[in-house]
Length: 228
Image (tube, rainbow, N blue to C red):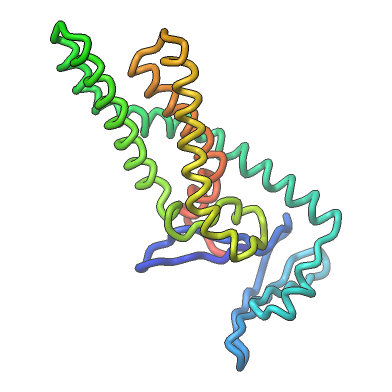
């Protein structure tokens, strides 16, 4: 069972609240006099039903948030499955985002025609910067909300402390980008054997792999029809 997050009438992401493999039924949402929200639902376990409850009441959450060893094992398994499911999508994302970024290599194509090393270097630099910019433009369009309201790993972890929301929202994309830059540079210009296109392709492959591992499964699932 999931809670959908809607912004300006559009579904942006979701938060799983039921980590069970059985069917979820009869969700109810209500609010107490202190403006605390409560969600209850039933989980099918033939021939019986289990009653589940989640709330924003801090006192009750402290009691409900106690996690057992089995819960940790299940969360790890769910997290690994989410990562692997996202990784499966990474070749398609790399081809789409990285392929669009190749449009910027028109600078390299034009300036490489001149017999001046400085102009060729400028063409490579502009192509790499432009390619990464286009890559990120398409990535942000495909994965809406990753720099806005979606907290990385929240699709698998039921509760992430509020003070970690902003560091994760901005820190994870930056870390992914820096990792991709490091990999691309170490495999090309660091060895004095690379080209601007090779740099771009390595960057696209690494960034897409990490981005899909963190965001791909949850965002693709959020775009699919379905209900709690």
